[in-house]
Amino acid sequence: MNLGPKIVLIVGSAPDSTRIESWELSHFASCVVINNAWRLTKQWDYLIFPEDFPVSNFPSYPIQVEKKLITASEFVPEQNKFGGFVYAGGTMAFTAGYWALGALKPDVIAYLGCDMIYDNADGKSTHFYGDGTADPLRQDITLQSLEAKSIRLLAHAKLQQCVIVNLSNLPSSRLLFPRVSISQIFSNEFNKGALENKIKELDSKKIKIAIQAEKSLSYMVPSGRYWESVDEFDADMLKQIDSYWLDSAAQFAKNISNDCSYA
Figure 1: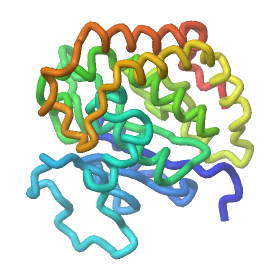
Figure 2 (figure 1 turned 180 degrees about the horizontal axis):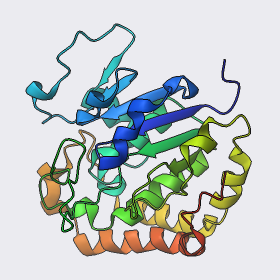
Figure 3 (figure 1 turned 90 degrees about the vertical axis):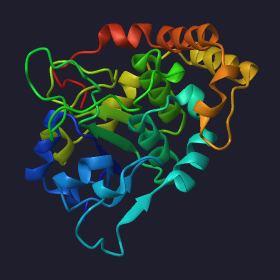
């Protein structure tokens, strides 16, 4: 039995997500797979997907009763508790994070395969199944800065006494989460406290400024279908709020290193 911190794994479709195929996932409290990532392992617990996810992409094998499909009816209310989709960012990588944060209440969320790097100029595939397209498939006013949205999620997790890490081995990522190695996650000496100390570099006062700016603007779409009301949103105001989130992490981002030294 794992008596350490409650760690939830979230898996996307970036090329290095295939590493999960050799992992023993019993070290994690839960495994959440996004969209097509169920193809990588049968050890998943939750499959989360948007309303437009093709039926043809669902698992072809019978889904065991203990496994759960997470649809908009589950993830929209959870994400709304954290301010809604306009501020959180309309992509499943963030939606999965907010859903896990609210529904599963973990101590740690570990991301794999959610780096959102879609430039394959070097000829390499952007997803484990080939070349994919950015999610969502439209120009999105809520995703002007993926980095800002990742800091927002990190900050909201901090407020829930949860830390978020990135297990990616890729050279770059749009997620500004501390990187740790899978061996550190699996270690009996995994140190959540060291990660918490790192997250303390987020500026609490500036986080409050960002949250207050969101409340003042009051862009909430209870249905989650924010694209149906996009004409009501001011892109410049949302960009300003993104800048507040980035500003709250100025020292944190400056000190981020990819040498896995925070666990």
